[in-house]
Image 1 (cartoon, each protein chain N blue to C red):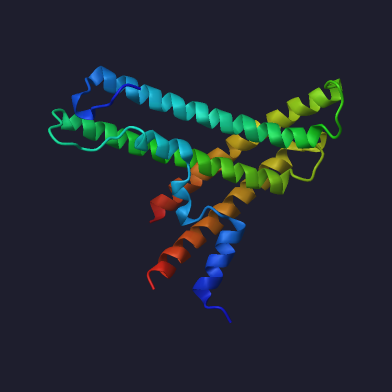
Image 2: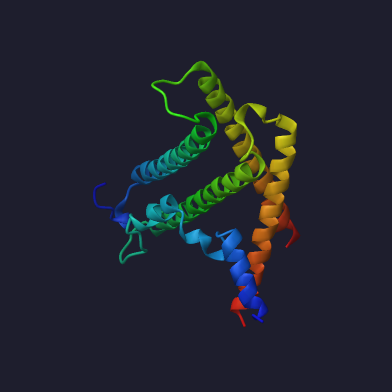
Length: 90
Length: 123
């Protein structure tokens, strides 16, 4: 990025910057999710090495990924609701 | 016999290591604001724009920290609820309930630790 003299940024530059920041955060988040999911599902579904993924392993991976995503969404929802609740009680 | 605050510190740090000090370690959150060299510097003509940017960044940082927490929590919950089972035998409803329970217990544990460490630190 070119030098950021923050006081001299036009509002469109500011907008661009904000968009970039948001995008980077989304990318980092997705990356984290995929890495973790890959680790967990590989350990679960691929017990021994072979030259390719056979169909049962593929099915297992697909299921595992679905479950992991379900789990992530559930955890996310439960956690945020709970935080809201605790915030409202303070 | 260890003093109580000491015990709290050990228990809290061992089992859930993202206590009150965790919010410095979300790398994408902190790099977003530190890499920009944003300070309310001298002669900044549009200081309201700066303030907007600062508050936006703080908000994004908090959101990113939340995401990190959720990742960690999902990790813990997955290991607890699904960890030892075979992948094709994960019953959906049971998983749902177990995960919710784990989230609540973990969140409660975290709250207790945070409060204990806060009050312990003031002694």
